[in-house]
Structure formats: structure tokens, C-alpha cells
Length: 326
Ligand SMILES: [Mn+2]
Image 1 (cartoon, protein in one colour):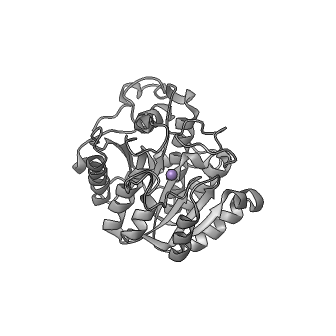
Image 2 (cartoon, rainbow, N blue to C red):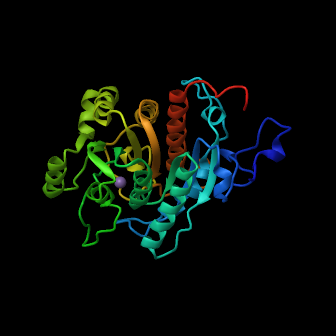
Image 3 (cartoon, rainbow, N blue to C red):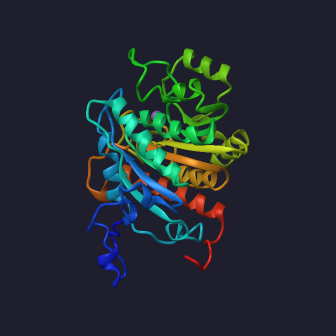
């Protein structure tokens, strides 16, 4: 295990621009046995072979790590999730260029190793196709999971441009394979001009719950999240956050941006509220397409904060620190 903060232990902390790039400067390992005792584990899934428009999300995990700030207390929640929880950065899955199926297998293997250690995997994408191995690995352990899915798009096409494997198809495939229970599948933030009647008809037949962006706008995020929690109910839940659910003003670095989206403040609150209310077994944050260095990439920056809010919710739900034995 490498502690990237160690050299700065005698100081107030490490500057964000120095040292080994791990998520929030967390301890880093690539050894599965060193995950024992972790509460949550960060896994990178740098892949963009399956995007339908602009590529570049293969640089997402590295950018999110570079934009991430050091641990500290969450001013609103009143706790530091990285002090309450034992979180480790497990590096990137062993993806292979131009081999998306091989990359998916590598991602499912890495996420499976996190689950085998009893920890919650938090996967940094990558295009949204990675939801298939992410959620698939969780369903292998927990059985069919509930899914809360923030996105401008449903990603429920049976195929896109004739391809079954795409960032526009993972949710269809996860429902059809039995990994996601469609009665406990909630979408938030849909808008724009895709998909069409065929996909929405499939969703209706399967009982998928959709809260389009115009509903978030008109009713407010608190009412929508309350309804979403009702639909998710008890049982294991995976959270999948596509940054394009945000308005491009907040998250310009993404491959298929759609104007008229959520504000960061609403999304960050919603991620914390849901993670703090359900039995969260895994999460991913996807479709970050960076083009600047460090925290100047505001899309990678908000993705870091989405992860931080998810961890804060998990910490709040588990209650005060696990005691003086730590
Ligand atoms: Mn998506």
C-alpha cells in the first residue's frame, strides 16, 4: 500500500498539485488482499471505444483524480467521509485499447475484487457502457439490484447504429440480463431528443420509472428524490451518474451534451441524499471528457464532488465513526 500523503505528514497536508495522483490522495494499492477492511474502493475504468459522438472519456478517471481535493469536513453534512470511512484507490482496471469486450471483462474483474473484499465499489468512467460490468459485478454478488440513474438520456436502446454494445445500450442490457430489477429502476433528468417511442415503450412495459428534467424543473429536486426513494425501496441499489445530466454550463466536458439540465447544487444534494437513504452496493460516475489540467477542468471537478457526496451519504447512513479501535 502506498500512502501518497506520507511525505507531507508533518505539514498541514499535501498540496493538490504534488505527489502521486490518487483519488483525494487516498492510499493506493493494486493488490486485492490489501482491500480487506475497506468500506469503499475507487476503481478507474478509462474507456471510450463505445461512445456514439465525441471520444475522450478514456481520460476521465485520471482527470477526476487530478481534480480531486484532499479530505476535509463536509461543511453542510458536518463530517469528513474520508475520515469516517476507510477508502482506498485500487487504480484502473486493466483495459485494452480497441477491445471494449476485453476492457469490460477487466472492469468486471476489478469491481468483483472490490466486492469480494466486502467494500462498495465507486467506479470512475469511462463512457457509460461501463455500467454493464459495474452493475453486472454487483448483481453477481447481491442478485438483481435497484438502479438510480442520473442522465440526460435513457441509455436503453437495444442497439445504436446497429451495435448492441454501446454507451447508449447498457441499461437495456442490464434489465434484459436480469442484473437490474426494472421495478426498482429510476431515471432522473431525461431531456432532449433521444430516444424514441420504441425505447420508451420498452421502458413502460418493463415498469421503469422516469423523472424527466422538466419534472425536476417544475416540482423541484426534493420532491423527485422523495418519489425516487419510494420506487427504489429496500434492497440493494446501484447509483449510476452520467455527468451529462448536468447542464453543459456546469459540465461542458462530455461527449453528448444536452442544454437545459440540472444544476450542480441539486445533483450533489441528490447524490448524497440517495446514498444516505438506500442500501448502496456500488456507484459509477461516467462520461467525463476532460480537456484541462487538475481542478481547472470543471467537469472532472464536479465528478470528484459527486463521488464525495456519495461517500458522504454512505458515511451518514453508517452513523458516527466505528469506534476507538481505529
Ligand atoms: Mn448515459
